[in-house]
Image (cartoon, rainbow, N blue to C red; front, top):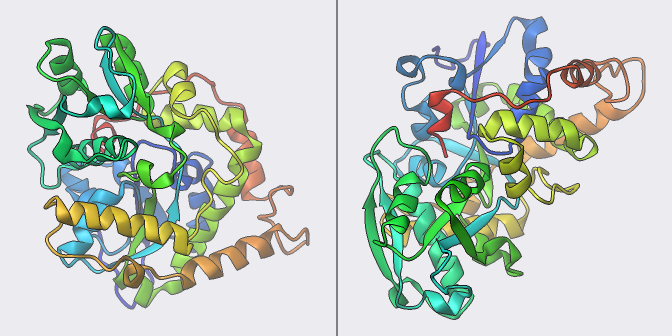
Length: 375
């Protein structure tokens, strides 16, 4: 892996979590390769290299040539430790957040979480985003009843390395050691079915988005300050590809479902259950004041719970100019002229990639072990 300097880099890196991301769609369709290949710039995924090569860059973002689209807990954690990253975009997708209980528990409303035992996992990793997700998920559910974490009884659940997502918590639920488990995403839908757990509180149904703030809501896109300083045009073009991928998605639900199966490692049941409403703004990338304020709420929660080494000024962290320029570039490419081969309706990169993708086997394939460990 090469560091970014004043010389034009010969490779760029990206990493994303196994969740719906514009980066995952762009990578699947081959758009990132198409954007930079002619200049001899290779675009590589951390998820496609051995663990010893990828190291912990997905979490620390210490690799200067890396674009990261994933959970906000590691992103905020890295920034709080002094890593010179910049926030260049935010997405928000409703991703099946729920509180699960035993079928015979009688718990079916937020106010019934008062006094119950809440499963809070503990993983032996540098930044325990699983723990952070559970705490904020329960806090969001309790807030719907005017309550807080202080009104319930968090119970620590050790989670050994290598077991499936949510398995330790759901096993504890089945043994009667806890009364409620927070879950999210496609694999959680499948895990709940395996364990016979039922949804007591559907956080997606909460009208106030503040009740749904968590690791993936909102989900940040970050880049290293070093790359932004030395090669801002590469950042703009990379983001423009993500904008195009996000804008393409709403018109291609079948292809998006296939890609989500590949990205999440879940089958059709999990994808359909976790992502019920993929609207036109599902993966829209922005840095609106509303989304920044929601991320700032997450930052305050994480800092209060001891997950961050220092406070992060979310609004100062944001760098809106690259996204503004990326939108201008993406809009210009949509103009149907002979000099705009990237117009989605033309035979440009997006058109070719879409045709290629539609010919693939629609059965989702499984992601790597490395990718499955991500948030």
